[in-house]
Length: 274
Image (cartoon, rainbow, N blue to C red; front, side, top):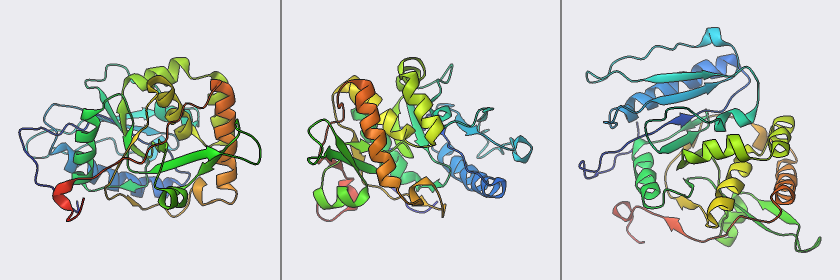
């Protein structure tokens, strides 16, 4: 793993759970699983509480290698959740008997230095009811259509304005209670919408958490690397479809729950100016 972070080892890093999305190609999945396995082994070396890692999988089960090798005398527990239905909502299914409170959700094309995850986890511990992540996005009022219509803003909008109102679940911490809330209380129309359009389950989770907390998420500065070359975000019209999602969810929730902020969590030990 690239990167290192001098931390107080009395503050034990606990990686709770890992949620994985899906890719279409089995060959790509096999390659990604190899990368994920190396990452999980490195993270497990810091994990002292016996927590497990859950990998959600939709596709060819025969291509999976479900074994895990001991590291430093400890076995790494990998749990595979095999999904028959190909739905983006699978990543937020309630997981029974979780040993710990935090969920670290990552897409299957994301690689990260463990030091980045350690810092994000400490930030999440300070605000366990909110989402803490690396990929900020924003919304703003569409003044051409009235105060109840909104536009989705991608990374360049965040960069230009310095504000955001969402962190995407492609790399984020949140409390396990939101899995149950998503499973039991997310409007069925929203889950059907995300399944049908194969998009916006991450926005739906941001709405869910913001609606419960009336607070913004926290964007953490950290290195993450996207090794996938294609995806829904690379398709034409992606921002327009995400804008449709935002307005659909506002209608379903009966209000705009997202809260904008300019706060960014930075590890001051690794920067000259902060």
